[in-house]
Image (cartoon, rainbow, N blue to C red; front, side, top):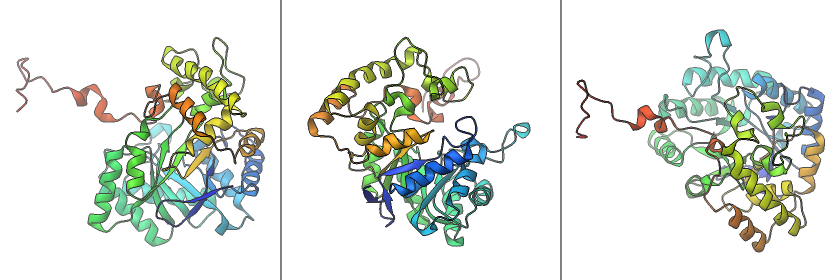
Length: 363
């Protein structure tokens, strides 16, 4: 296993991080299986376990906590996240989500209880919260660091300009800085190459990228004109009202470009003497700004397959061939960007009509 420094934090992390999204709930409810995967990953040299409070409504954190009992705590970087709705449906979760000081201070204690830990190594904002001032959020996170509950802070799926703004706020107010950004990045999802990854590098941050397999598309398991395999994410998401279900609709016209790209990538993987899955995981690690890639296995067989390709590195001809399929900076499906900016909503893009039906002059 290769190790890289997470930005300027001094924390050495493995190039593969073990993501716990699939642990618990309807993904993989078997706690023993999740624990076994964590132990297998640690034995293989992975030293980062990444989870979030919203993964299976906290069950993922509980599984991680069980797995770490008896493991040398100082040898593992435990990362979790705050932001998503953790409130009971009856109340709509209004006060149990977002990036406010009020919620962050409660959420960290909830996460630590589920993880059965006294601190986490990396506490990340799962998404940007435009409703909350960055100074308030960074002030709360700074207090958590000073209290010893958190060692370092990071952000996830943040716009590049918001990352820059966060550093300006931190410097101006003497607050903790984000040491990392967790960005969506895969062969099919490359928009972060245009701004996020350069900003991360310029500001001395690490990049832990999520979904290097594009939600399973880059495993090659989805075939044109066929139903998704039983148990696959597309199968589990089919017909659901989950906010990201559209990303996995294999029959959708919006996802047709991904199917086209996968069909063109298969022979490239074959020419490189590897599988499409291993090609995709290796590819994200070639970007100079990327520190670690989150792998998210649902079964131990999937984990073993990924680990078997951990030493794979691609030559320039292979990288050029991939660029010819999906151009640098291109994301094939809008839903794969991971976050829909509120400033792209119609109400934010259209000047209101004045009383009487006349439109403002623009002054």
